[in-house]
Image (cartoon, rainbow, N blue to C red; front, side, top):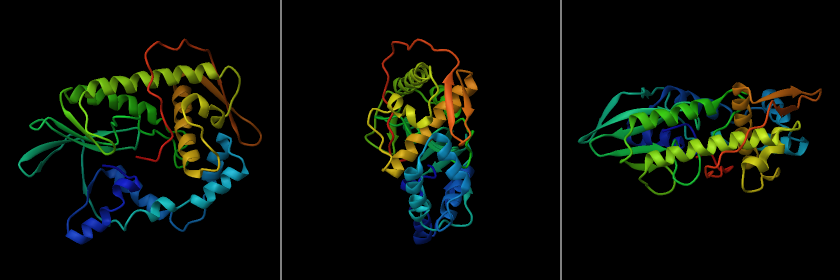
Length: 280
């Protein structure tokens, strides 16, 4: 379905073991190769600049240096050719037909499979039953706006997939009630947007906003969780900048300080807390 090591990690081994081709979307395949290529490389200056801009101190940056390249070591060697999955195409698997539906946000071109005959959606990490998928900005594209793609994907899945399907997520249990789940994601996005704007009456850094977005404390000595929380917070902040909710000032040390243009009232809909969690 997508590039994260807990999903693509054994793909290379499987293709070699069984002599089968690898089928992926183009962006997920290329991002997987890029992740593997980081193994054994020096920490890029752009990565250090990205996390310093978010407010990381020297200790947190040392944790990033120590973890850099680990994700690539969790991915078996990928074949140098693949069969591209295209959005909207149909596949015949056994006796049934499946349509490829791609989504954005969690990753750039996440593949889901929908069978009208079976009334089943294989959702991967695009739609999870208990938490919202991590939607993050990464050092490779620091000005990315993945929440815009995430929001567009929610609307698209609502339009293309009926509510009465059985959803098979990559984590947790199968569930029904797809459209209610999509509604919950929309409500959460709206509430988090409002909370961030209301928290930015005074200039604050990305790391100062973890308590606004995440129910559990995020410790700087947990390098992975700290990076995930930072990436998702920056994704929200980039989204709010595009919407005109906030502006940003970069100080002489290269740290970004965000401030709301105006506060808004938080709507009454119940929010689903987002979590800093392993990339799923």
